[in-house]
Amino acid sequence: MQTSPSREIAVLISGEGTNLQALLDAAAAGTLGGRVGLVVSDRPDARGLERARRANVEAVCIRPAEHADRTAFEAALLAELERRDPALVVFAGFMRILRGPVLARFAGRMLNIHPSLLPKYRGLDTHRRVLEAGDRWHGCTVHFVTPELDAGPRVVQYRLAVRPEDTPETLASRVHVGEHIVLPRAVGWFLAGRLAQEGDVAVLDGKPLAEPVVVEADK
Ligand code: GRF
Image (tube, rainbow, N blue to C red):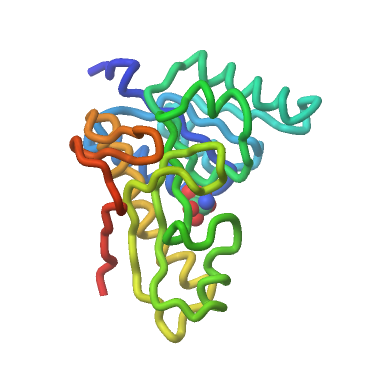
């Protein structure tokens, strides 16, 4: 069965692409409510590109080095996205900060997965920062993308208890498990018309989310 173009998502990646894989798997299982129509990487060696091609999804690399500046890079990315006109753009481990036209064109239709319990630990190196602070809890957050980095309206979090023996590596891998649960869930809500961004808040099933939905890790 052909899915309508409005149920297509584009996924932006830079690396391994396990979150992309979770979305591809959910689409194949019929639980996403749509399909991945396009994958764009800023790095030619991103393994996620192979994952996309293996799933017969169009996969494109746009290299910043081949563009005069950040504006030209972003214009090329926008052109690629507009060609496909996805319902939603998912930032799944895309390690580049966008500032310009992509954010304007797709406002309210962009979700990002971030490896911390936002608003704590925006930016990089979240697992090490959690351990250094001695936090009891860690996890990841799916949020709408806005011009301010990692600060858009939060939708859903996966939360786990930090263990005394945890290292940045063990935390990264335990958080990854949760990313693969909450990202397809949020994308599914969006594609089903249950989730929207209204200004500074995410709205799920008609209710503004003062706090994100929380999924607790198994003990
Ligand atoms: C994830 O931890 C994501 O939260 C972060 O980058 C990582 C991407 O992992 N921003 P993958 O490429 O999806 O495996």
